[in-house]
Amino acid sequence: MQKYGPNAITAEQEPMGQNFEDFTGPIAYMIEAAAIISAIIGHWDDFFIIIVLLLFNACIEFWQSRKASNALAAWKKGLAPTATVLRDGKFETIDASKLVPGDIVKIRLGQIVPADLRLGLRFN
Image 1 (cartoon, rainbow, N blue to C red):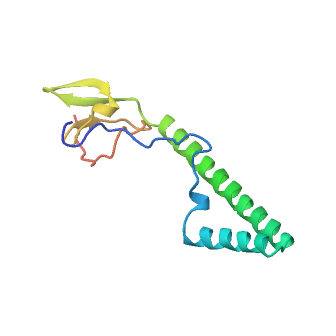
Image 2: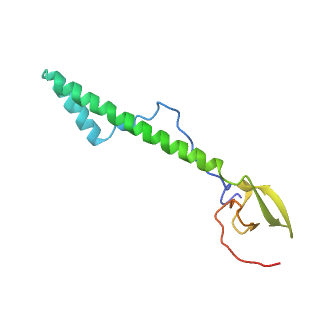
Image 3: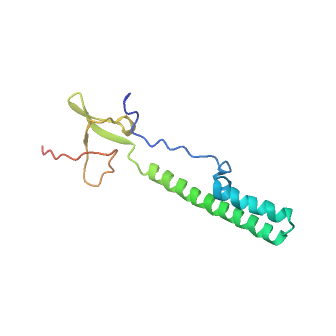
């Protein structure tokens, strides 16, 4: 557990409205500079079109990021919360986040697998 950490997804969800990556970077800076230059020389039509396109792009990025966060949350919800594992010579049910490499996990047909497993068949 100390070497690998818990068997859990650790993706943190960013608070809404704190993602300004859509307005940073070389291409975004170039487009923003074009908007500023259009405003300075008085081409207000071009300025407003550029600003609308920047905001539209930011809205699309926000929507896609939100969809990805919702998909990750749904995936986390579908993970198995517990696992039946062989510890000290007997099977016991533990929290799936406490699985470590080398654990022998008992699974059944149709069961949600609690971690990445290497499948070895054992018939009793």
